[in-house]
Amino acid sequence: MNDTCRDTIASLDDYLERALPAAHHAVVAGHLRRCPYCTDYLQTYRATIRLCQAVADPAERSDGRDRPDALDEPARHLVEAILRKRSRPS
Amino acid sequence: METFGEAKLLIALRAGEPAAVRGFVLAHRGRMHAVAKRLLGSEEEAREIVQEAFLRAFQALEQFRGCSKLGTWLHRIVINEALMTIRGRKSRVVEHPIDDLLPRFYDDGHRIAPLPAWSEPADVLLLRDEVRAVVQRSIDELPASLRIVLVLRDIEGLDVKETAAMLEVTEGVVKTRLHRARQALRAMLEKELTR
Image (cartoon, rainbow over all chains, first blue to last red):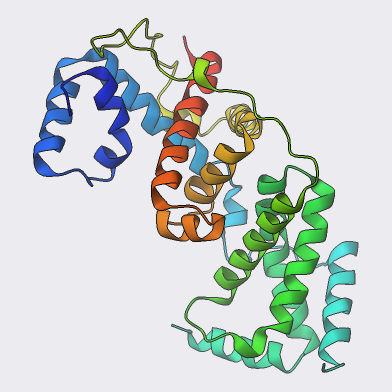
């Protein structure tokens, strides 16, 4: 690991997950303290991850208890297909 | 571990009780469809995969051991079905290189020409629907091999080990692809979100 932008950016995932060996972590942290470009890169890289995680609809992440009561047409067909299979043991 | 509610639900589903089956489909179908669509990029394929995954899950209910929640178990089945579909596609899409989306460095390892910071912090951007649409569109534009890893890790919440097992690649490959995917996505968003 060299104290460069290239090596710092290559180490970002492990740095963010605190998975680097202590000496390596210290080099990355030191570089980030001194280099505004890499500090900015880290911030936007972290923001990218958060934006990505937020793509899923919040309702989609729930366990479904806030879903409407009615089944739409494809869901009704699915339920019927499941029930047909369950009532016809293989 | 099964919760008490899950245990009762499992008994009802195994018995094929219509109300339980209906409730289970109602609770999970929407999310599973979204998961499949993110991986496959196709509404129609996603619908077929979800149908298939539910039927497969119900066929395998007797083998469900309760090591995870039923919804988590179904989620993994959907992902697996979607990945099998992707592997089975006859025409492989040629992936565009993403090298121009990765940071560039001088020979001494220092960065060339970084762009200015984004217009707002992520937590502010997150509140805007149009930003979410830009993020989704940008994810869809990533090469499939990177997009799938990004979706599994950053959206579906699988860990590196599980992602590697699902994709039948090493954990090192998952880490490399994820890093490239995040860097490329970051650069794509930069174009939209810089001051």
